[in-house]
Picture (cartoon, rainbow, N blue to C red):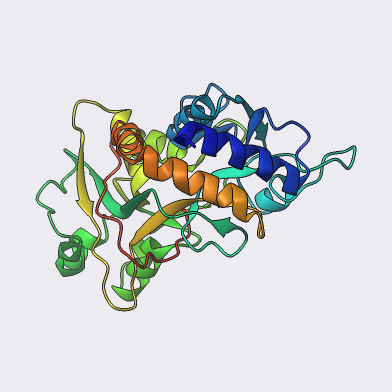
Length: 282
């Protein structure tokens, strides 16, 4: 049996097991305003990977839109249709490998948090995050570094005695016009903040909005007890093993093209380790 026929058979079997109403659709759960991941205009890298998979399966691509915040999985992947026939959507295109709210595929990329510094504001000589901890007090007091309500960046600031210089941000804004990456980009541009420790895809988005190389980007290095690098996989409902296998096959078949898509978003990439760690996406 050819690869394409195997994929088609898996897709049909997967639909039958899960009660999917229409096996001719590749149904994705996504946030409509979450660059660089997904947008309603289909400009995110997750949109493009989903389109690639749908095309190879010969299926129509369909999105169920819901803001990615608390309750996202419950209201999308695990939510039944109003008529009681199957679920609203079947795949979340990006979740931490080993995410406990879904079953997860093999990882398809690995990235790290980045210290992103706006140039021309007195910080251009910083090339190692630990330099911030060694600055004279009068210099430290001028720091304006974004600080999220959760995530390793804030923990790093706390461990290194810099928490009082942080500018607080919510990881999930609830803003209908700006997601976190969009807000950080705007505030870096206007000078509300000068730097941020930001998850790799978001850091890539901020840099892509300023193509004149206005930022210094320093990858954060993981240490014992302080993890900055994580692997990203795709999420399916627990027990949906046939769909998981289908996605694993598609990831393997298209791995190089997936990397090219992601690299186009200036996301810092590194080899996927054999035992990826979980992450919180801030």
